[in-house]
Image (tube, rainbow, N blue to C red):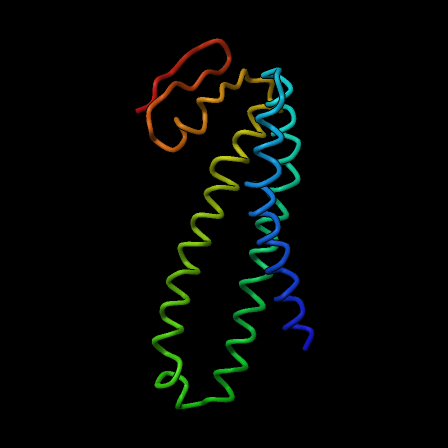
Length: 147
């Protein structure tokens, strides 16, 4: 029973974080006038958001796997016949969700926070450049083009 509640709480925290990022954090950041204030606000928020998102996703994955192990023990040899196709689709979606979430948190947001903490000059063209859509990355007074 504890496993179920941990799974449900982790799901609420993860979804709340993802929805909160898009509906609260980014719109508030766009209302700020000063570029430096935008960067500082976003870096402080992402510094808190990154471990919460990855931690909740990890708890969600492990509690889901533990529930699956119990279900497999209950179904025994009928497990693959009755749940195999649905489980395969779910695991496929979870695989891409984990890849996307870790890339968002560690690949983009973590690098953004570390650059801001390191004193680099950050342009808001950074996310476009990080996603491979061209643009310039500015840092330490030098400009490198990506593309």
